Length: 123
Image (cartoon, rainbow, N blue to C red; front, top):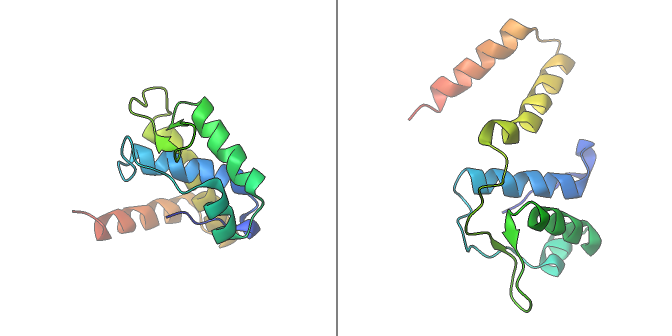
């Protein structure tokens, strides 16, 4: 469900926060959907459980997740306080631009590549 990359330069807890927000905003994680436990996710990705706990706590504070004692974390029913989809895309766009710059691509090349990608994935 989640992919954590220690070499990305983005803190692991932030990667998890961003992925959960994207999945919620995109409808892949619906209200009431349970998330893996802190221990389960930490074991799966071989990270410190505090990393997962920090991400879950931030998501709970933002109203994205709901914590109920003795039950798994779940997606909050009314997630109106969460950021809008374009804000959620910002880190991905930044990563795309950074990667394109490393490949010495200019603005027009990046835009053309995005347009081609959109055409390939057009429904």
